Image (cartoon, rainbow, N blue to C red; front, side, top):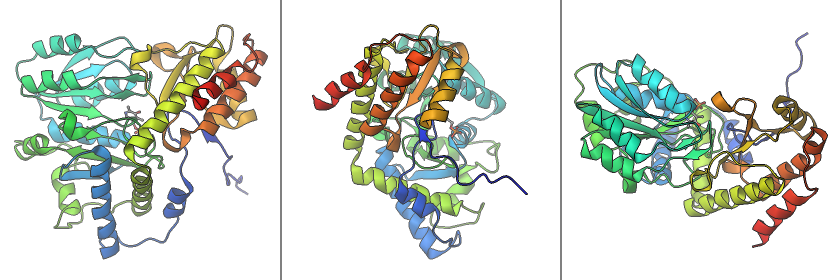
Length: 391
Ligand SMILES: *Cc1c(COP(=O)(O)O)cnc(C)c1O
């Protein structure tokens, strides 16, 4: 007899993704299937494109979900825009910049890194210096929300520097979309990719991408076929456009889930949703600092949806997280790279970003930290969060 694995334990997901999923999305995921060319599904595809444009804040025609997790969107942006030998400048200050370098190199790009220490932004002068090293840069790629560190990368000056050199500006907004402003059209971003499992609060499985006019033009002007058949936007747009040409079977249930998740975002309103993420971040940081913990990222570059905090001296990172999961059912993330064992990553993404969750997490920290060897002022964390919420 196989072991029963269902139902899974009722976790509270406060890590770097996936985030909590709204009951309406879970319900949508369990509704009956239709075919991927059914008129009802085509109507859902059209509505999804419209909703995605609202959430990306763009008029871009080519705005669709790629089948696969955020990494599929990352790879789609790279392989559709890069031809062998193209120069690509990539901001590297964490896991996802590092991954972009790998993907772009595999696609035949000549990569120039604009590097900064993990936990810091990529400064404009470092990007400018990297661009100086290129002859005809094709793309600049930056990660807006570096989930591995909690850094919020400013984009506007980087876009200007990129366009001055005639290159396309591509942004990873996997963690930022629907949690803080991305504003594709206003900022002048040429292409972007996201994921469903962070602030969109849908299970992992789809990756919304948007291509603006200049990126679409670069796609049309390719001299070589897109290296990936599965991610080739010139073929995918024929299924997502008026022709409805079969390419691969759309993930039907995931498409239902994304549609419902996008409706929830639009019902809440982007500004209200951003304000909610900011407020819960502020309350969490106030609480953690009142407990004597220190944040990894300087205040002006902190993300609202991913909070990196240093593990207090003397506390065993893994043992603490194990207790938090076993006793409180709360998942938080471990540190990565240079921060392995010394940083916790607390996600407040989408549905996970709530006052109740911040209070529950701080309460659990207050109870568990002393037991794991940290001296903290009793009750100070939840009181500090109270002050933020009652202000
Ligand atoms: C999570 C994430 C990805 C990758 O998404 P997956 O869903 O894990 O494939 C890419 N970039 C950033 C910034 C992310 O946070």
